[in-house]
Length: 248
Image 1 (tube, rainbow, N blue to C red):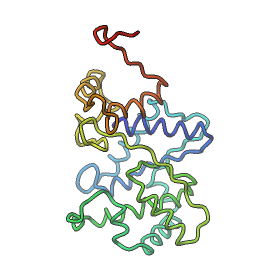
Image 2 (tube, rainbow, N blue to C red):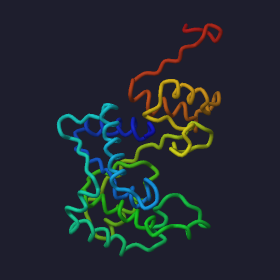
Image 3 (cartoon, rainbow, N blue to C red):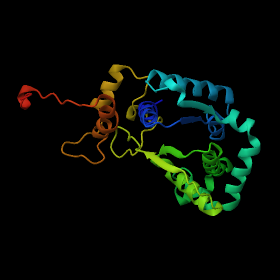
Image 4 (cartoon, helix red, strand yellow):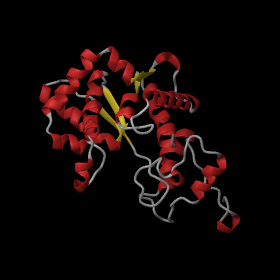
């Protein structure tokens, strides 16, 4: 798990809890199976083991679980137990939307590669949208990369004359440490900081990160300070060497 998923998730949940919200964290094991995680064919048992591991990391990171305001819900268990509620919503969403509209909600993919989409990848946005209504969520908290699914959910409310549209609360996507990486990725370990990294690993990655002088926009080091360090510690001190002017 990288810190965007570990630390930023913890910060976001704690902010919601402090504001008085009840937070349901959707452990999407069925979605991971649909995405072919854990090898070809998928292995739900392994996926659920990883899901439990993620929960333990959030606990260790300081997610505020006291007072019962945060609940972890497993998609497989919840959908199985309330299938009569879930599937009609999902089928209605699928029925009301054209294929191209659903494809646009999927992962970023060029037009020349859209023919490579599996049926599962097309099914995925419909399930994500259905989750919002199945969980009766007043606020949907996802990353900016999921904004198209959130828009789909609000448009579905217009189509079905639902009065209470979900409020979309999108968090910033933490970039990778290398130049031009808009999103931290597990596929490039050298560009991401992981919750399991040793101190020496973190220092090495930061020292090799893209951080050009006098450049503020798209500077991953400054974004880490803004979205991780300051929310966590409330301060950030730059210690200057004597040859660079010292502390005074």
